[in-house]
Image (tube, helix red, strand yellow):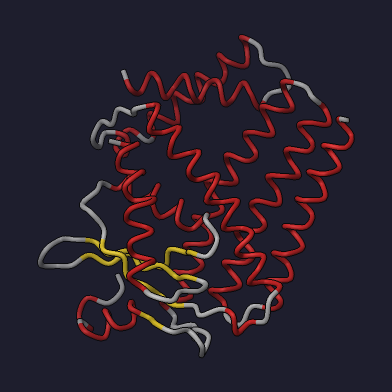
Length: 161
Length: 116
C-alpha cells in the first residue's frame, strides 16, 4: 500500500520533469518507478511511518524561517572580522530514533547555516547516539544543545512519528 | 511589476552566491569554509531558480524550478556532511581559535571504538 503511494509520487515526479505533463509520461514514470522500488525493497521495508501532514508543514515552515535567518547570520560572519567567530565541535546527545529520522535531522542541521553535522557516535553500552555538530560561533555549548534538541529534534520526531 | 520581482530575486540570489564565494576565500579552516559555501550557495540558487519561475510564469517551469530546489536541498547537505566527516577523519586541523572539540574529547576517552 505504502509502496503504491511511493510509486505514484515517483510517476508524478517523472512526468513533471518531462516537456509536457501527459498520461504517457506518467505511465513511463510509473514503470521506471516500479523498477526503482523493486531494487530498493529491502531498504523500504523498515518500519512504517504515517505522517501527520500538519506537523510536516510546521517543520517545513520552521526550517524555511531558520534557513533565512541563519543565512543572514552567516553573511554577517563572512563580512565581519574573523575574530567575531568562535567555532567549535559540540556533542548533542540524541533521543532514540530510527535511521530515517536521523537522516532528516542531520540533513536539516547541515542545511541551516552556522551548524554542520560532523559525525555520529553510538555508545556501546547504552546504544544512545550522539551527533557532533560543527558550529560557526558559540558562547555556551549548552545553549547549542538546547536549541537543537528543542528545535529541530523535537519537531522532526513529531513530524515523522 | 513582474520584471521588478525577477530583478530583485536575481540580485538577492547573486548576493548570496557572492557571499558564499567570499566566505570560501576568507574563512580560516575547511569546516568554516564548508559552512560558508554550502549554505549560501543553496539559498542563492533557490532565489535564482525562483526568479526564473516568476519570469516564465508557466506551470511547467514552476514545477521544474521546485524540483531543482528539492533535489538541491536533498543532495547539498549529504555532500557537505560526507566532505566534513572525511576531513575530520583524516584529522584536518581545525582553526586555532576553535574553542571546543567534543568529538576529539570523546574519541580520546575511548580510543578503542574510533572510526569504522
